[in-house]
Image (cartoon, rainbow over the protein chains, first blue to last red):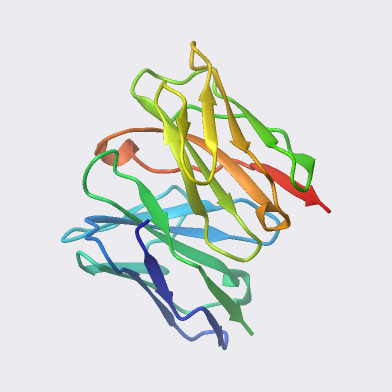
Length: 116
Length: 114
């Protein structure tokens, strides 16, 4: 199957700083990527849809100025958590959608963010 | 997207078949049934998908009822490594625009017992 990578796999940052997470589709092009967040013992929550060449579409309740998304190319999307606070500590997972067929989505391994 | 309902948890003995049910009674004609699983602290892994015919791959089989209102994921010989949360999701196939996104429910925690 298609491979999606994320970097870093885990990060610890201080409150008030910003953190950037990268998501790459390694063996396919993805016009559309998705960012999810998962708190402990909860399901994945879709945060936003990242579209190459245009602005991201955010789900209701997700602050677009806090979670900056840039889809720089057909294989790279980044999520920047700005002015991070302890409540932003979570597991962030990206997903890339294949641009053909039934447009399957493949997921990255996730990034564990801890804000101290 | 149509909503799905799944049991919260299930147990299965190692080596036996695991049958995971999913109810999607409001599924639309152009929506596919997708199954993903998530092993602890990892990203979800695609398992299988189908529209109306039964499907089989190297990981599992998917049985969809004739009225498409429910489906069953079958892991033929469960191993300890199959312990995970299994998600059943319905989604429009094809590009679908803004509606073509995977929305996760609570899933079923499958515990494979030795």
